[in-house]
Image 1 (cartoon, rainbow, N blue to C red):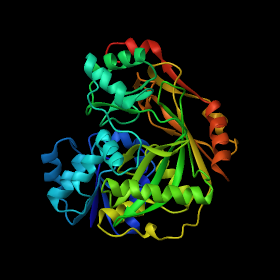
Image 2 (image 1 turned 30 degrees about the horizontal axis):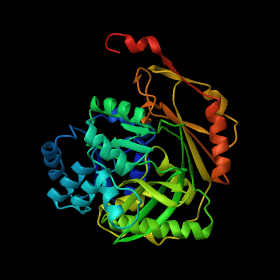
Image 3 (image 1 turned 90 degrees about the vertical axis):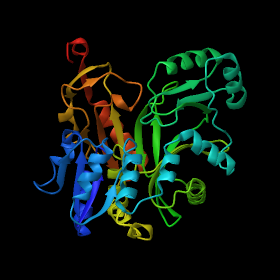
Amino acid sequence: MTVACLESLTFGLGHLVRAAGRLGERLLLLTRDPAYYAYELGRLPAGALDVVVTDTFDMERSADLLRRVPALRGLISSTDTWTLTGAALAERLGLPGLDPAVLRLTRDKAAVRNRLHDAGLTRGRAVENAGPDREARGLLLKEAGLPLVLKDTAGTGSQNVWLVRDEGELDAALAEASGRDLKGRLFAEPCFSGPVYSAETLTWAGRTRLLGVSSRLMSPEPRFREEITAFPVAFPDPQRISLGRWLGRVLAAIGYTDRFAHVEFVLTADGPEVVEVNPRIGGALVGEGLCRALGVNVYEAMIEAALGRRPGLMEADVPGGPAVAFVLGYPAAPGVFTGVAGLDRLTGMPGTPAWYPVKRAGDLIEHLDDSRGYAGIVYAEAETAELATHRAVAAANALRVLTDPAGREAPGG
């Protein structure tokens, strides 16, 4: 009996393999490039899962491969890039899955914004006529106001996001956006001010359980670069309960009835405002943090959902564990990644800090304004998320992500 993964997030594959084994399933990974999972695969026993290399953007080829898998019982597609492909494959193969129309909605940030506005769950609508001509520009300013955010309806990793605080920045952002290759459409929405968080939730049959909230410490404006995350944020009980109810309403409004969700939101002076709804478990080390902080392998719920079974995590009393934090390691300048200095200093530092590599030596790092630019992640833990943050930051400050700027210009580099 097999559960297939159409690609995966960078981290978490080991937890998935162990979860599948515990539930009596074999995990199969379809991937374009196994090297992307080198860290995870290198820590698993030989033969722990099946890996098939194929063009995962080729729907017909992927469908043909999956049809030939004996006793295929479920399909997991946990990345933004392959969400819609995975939904279409599950539907085509008759496997358990969320309504593809709901997943298409979640991948359209403007449509989600307007759906939530219609449900009374946000103060701002999306403005899609974000063009440079005078009429469109005037309507955008009138409907979204200033400050506003311009972004891609299908963007990921804080890419193609512009903060606009005045009309000069609007003209510059529109001009820059016109030269970008967007995954969706350009739209504008109000800029909601306040700290950013992400809610880690599990939903089944329309009922949502809030597993906890992660902090999202960002770079200074005008960038939206994620830098530090900690879990779980210790909200007072009344506020935590209120957030859980609000999240249930948000997910219900977009028809999200099952599986994990990673809901980014701003906690404004007037209450929470959704940034985006991701139909998956959180990326980077969010899944790792959930497992450690809750004291359970949350990926068992992912396997159960893929099999069409109610996840035990919906009701389970979790034993708990340490709070966790991690810092994304960016280089000081773009160039060819050459390594990390100071890793030896992590030994003996509090919080058992560890470096989780994302880039490999020789990889070109060009973009430092968004999540494409980090080379790895520094992880640490403690009794509270606040203390874990202090430890992770101290560990990260001892490291230097090194790049060779000259290599950026080398032929074939």
